[in-house]
Length: 311
Image 1 (cartoon, rainbow, N blue to C red):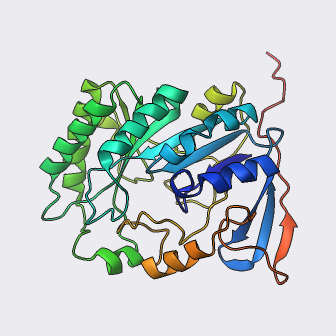
Image 2 (image 1 turned 135 degrees about the vertical axis):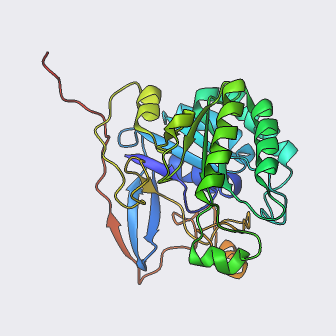
Image 3 (image 1 turned 60 degrees about the horizontal axis):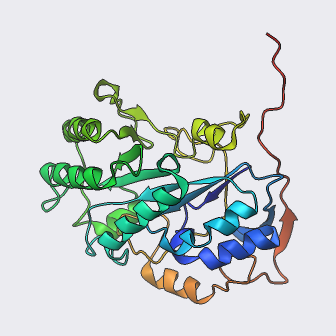
């Protein structure tokens, strides 16, 4: 089993204490986003967890817990989003200089191969031009060179909720502009020895040396675990997504970063309400189990390939 922590929220930034408690207690409850009365009981131990994939914009709160995670025998890597946007777009992400220090400290602690940089999403508008992104990508690539070996980027997706929330900030990116950005990014990435991939993009960019990414990546996990995997692609993601199947232990409407382009939050009001319900000792990320909940044990196992191939 691959644990995704999490596409729905930033567990390292906001819920590190809760997460470590879940690992120590050996299980986590996850609500069905489509039916909150339904709860899955997910075991968390090294006998069933192949790898944990962390998604974050700020890993600093979790770094002090990594030794404990290591002692429990879990394997993991980080997808670390670092964008050039200010608080008009990423309202509460925090001081980017401190976050970059955190990125470097994380890399020094676990190795650059396990810290994958995400420049996501690319937003174009009157203030954020192609030239702005090329300058920003160069600056960040220079700063992160030697601390990561891969960058995954994507162009902003105009979901309906994003259009409502950020109509004046987020605009369409034409195919021609996508190619200009891709070419520019590829030249910069080569200079700083960073491989470049795209996340869930239909547009082929292999002519620039850019491949389609798998953020929850089979090859990466096999390198970390030291054994082959037999998992399949995640059918719950978009067709363009190459990620392996995983179980996400986060909850929607629980991330405090307040990014205008976020698909996982409905509104600041809903997020604030949910945060008030968070209890670090609860098996649920948001709230506590109630009598009306139906709790079902999720059948999980290692994805380790045990079949012996005869040559």
